Amino acid sequence: MTQNKSSAIMQQRREPHDSLDYFPTPPWATRALCEFLDNRDYDVTTETVWEPACGGGHMAAPLWEYFAFVYASDVSKYDWLAPVGEQDAVCDFLIDGVCDVKHTDWVITNPPFRLAEEFIARAAAVADVGFAMLVRSAFLEGKGRYANLYSQNPPSYILQFAERVPMQKNSLNKNLSTATSYSWLVWIAGEAPLKTEFLWVAPCRSRLEMDRDYPDDECAEAPGPMLAAMGIDK
Ligand SMILES: C[S@@+](CC[C@H](N)C(=O)[O-])C[C@H]1O[C@@H](n2cnc3c(N)ncnc32)[C@H](O)[C@@H]1O
Image (tube, rainbow, N blue to C red; front, side, top):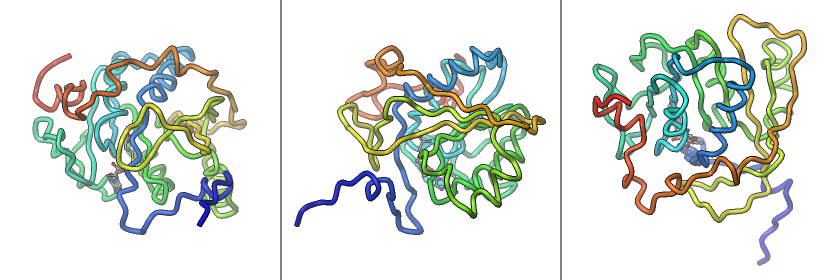
């Protein structure tokens, strides 16, 4: 049987209801967001960020390069995750009071697709300065999503990647290609934008990608949040 590789089909990416939907983000895509924030004079160097669906830490690690402190948690116990002080790093972001992060300036993540709207609502409730979600660009469509989200609380920025951000289930792979398009959606707290600003993320992969982003052994390098989890300062 021939596989149907039409992009319409490939963008559907259906997951079983109880799937963790673990698609690690290539770190350069997170650096692109941090560069955007820096260019717009959002000084995050003194701020905290919570990556609440951190998986193997591939987004948390580059966030650590820009922010003063990164909390990393996930509903599933990934090998590298350990408590930060009193904070249990294994917790469900969507259940109020379960994750013990007392205060965070930002929430930044690549949420499980089927729970993205719930993640946005929760991030809006807990982030003091802003939050950003990496989503498939197809997430911008949908009558229900328009009624429940975009018409009520549109993002301040939509950052559409001009180049593809290749992701696959369960592991990071430098040599992938993909038919799926991704965007960052960014909300700045306290701003109810009259107009959402739509911008392209210019091609930046070759500049922002680093060798250390693809260790052979996922736990071979200790990313920043892992150091923090072990109580080691930056
Ligand atoms: C698309 S992956 C993103 C992983 C990581 N953020 C990255 O970008 O590399 C989604 C992650 O969400 C986690 N997850 C699913 N449901 C969750 C929940 N209710 N609370 C916290 N994490 C959840 C999964 O375990 C998985 O690691």
